[in-house]
Image 1 (cartoon, rainbow, N blue to C red):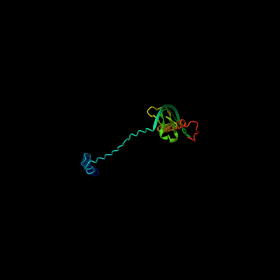
Image 2: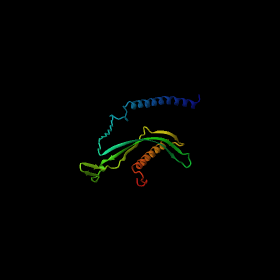
Image 3: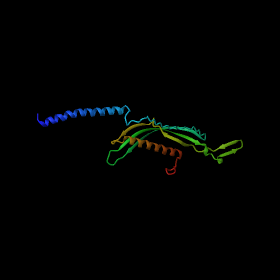
Image 4: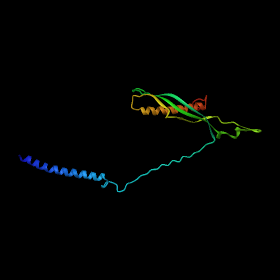
Length: 182
């Protein structure tokens, strides 16, 4: 055998046992760390507890009388137009409710008239005091989107539906008023 090959064989015979010993030590060290007894594991277990307590307060406002509850459904098409990309659109069936009420706190002393044994009270105008979109009953009828923003399209569509409900509420409350007066 040539001399160079003998040196290579002798050095390889030494490298393999050293690699096995080093590899075994690394494996033992990792096992020791994973069992939680190592240098890098915490000595005591830390418990972090975060409590958020919400107190609900029941306030019955007897000055506001609920008169009527409207339930509505509306079909809405929302479109996002792009310059160089196909437009995205969504068709939604929006379900919601609006509550008509009367605020008795608006009654002033001038609104009360005493006519002998009869008391006449001029009541304030009814108004829409609460409105909301019911997302559980609303449905997505169709979406056509050519980009990866379908969730953004639907989010914008529902926000636009809420704005439309607000505009409708103002139109019901102030019939005949121009949009700037509402």
